[in-house]
Amino acid sequence: MAGRRSDSDARETRRLVLRRAADIASVEGLGGVTIGRLATDLGMSKAGVIGQFGSKEALQLATIDLAAGMFREAVWAPVEEEAPGLPRLLAICRSWVAYLGDPPFPGGCFLALTSMEYGAQAGPVHDALVTVLGRWRRTLLRDIRQAIDDGDLPAGTDAEQVAFVLEALADGTKRARQLHGDIDVARRCLSAMHATLGAAPVESATTG
Image (cartoon, rainbow, N blue to C red; front, side, top):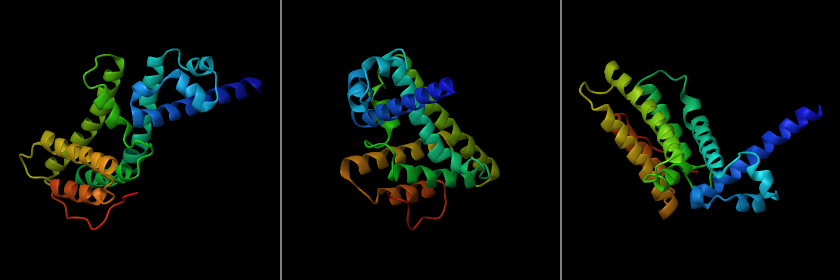
């Protein structure tokens, strides 16, 4: 029993550390996440924090995994069973915009900030972000190409261009919401995504 409680306590401590690290990183970048800062914020010793991970880099990588998992649960999991192609693309747009309008982190989209922070820095953190964001791009491309094959998007449509536009709209939405406080941007983003996919415009969207 004691061993099981100890394992459970360790998992909960790890979860608390990672969630606090992600919150900080969403505002200040992963560079703002320090062992001392986490120890102070969580009322732990530095050894208790680093002991969960072994190194600061391992902590950073685990924080990326946490944030990526939260994105998948919020955006992909609700639509995974939708029909492939345009139906799932439209569902993705709805859940994606809902996430952008009410992000789980105080600084908005964790992945947006950290990808800018590490875009020009080689190393494991950069590579982890490339993997996470590349996986999302491939998810979009799969359903875009299916929509083309189904005839829901015109033959000859450039799937890479469509994915680029959808991601650019999402990036612009993050900036408008966080920097300018535009609470109506989610509706406009969803309408623009629908237009990109040749779907009917929307009247409203979740803005958080």
